[in-house]
Length: 188
Image (cartoon, rainbow, N blue to C red; front, side):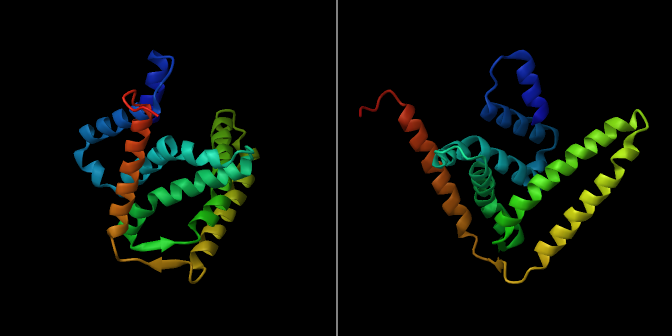
C-alpha cells in the first residue's frame, strides 16, 4: 500500500487514498491470487477501508477537536469495522480489544520509532544507547499483552456468522447514501 501511495505522490500532486488502496489490492492479488483469502490481507485492507471511508464521518462526532477523543474514535471505528472478520475467523468477540488497543497501540508505536532510531544509530555503532529502552519497552508490551489476554470473561464465543452480512449491508447503504448526496440529479 505504501509503495503505491509513494509512487502516486511522486507522479501526481494529490493522491486519492481510495484509488491507491484499490490499486495496491489489485497488484497484490495479481502477484499472489490467494492473498485475498489471507486473514492478514483482509484485516489490513479492512482497517484501511475503515480509515478512508468510515472514520471521516465518525470523526464529526468530535466537534471540539479533542485529540484523545479523536484517537478513541479512530481506534473504535477500526475495531468495530473489523469485527465481522475476526468473528468469522476466530469465532470470538473481544470486548476488551478497544480498551487494550487504546493502551497498546501508542506504546507499540513508540517502541517501533525507538527501534528505527536504534537501527539508524547502528550505522554509527551507537545503538547500545537505546538498547536498554528497547528491551524495557518490549518487556512492557509483552507483559501488557499477556495481562489483557488472561483477563476472564472479556471475550465471548460467537458462532453465528450472520453479523458479517449485516455489516456488508450497512456498508453498502453508507456508500449508496454518500453517492446519492453527490448526485446532481437529486433535488433537495
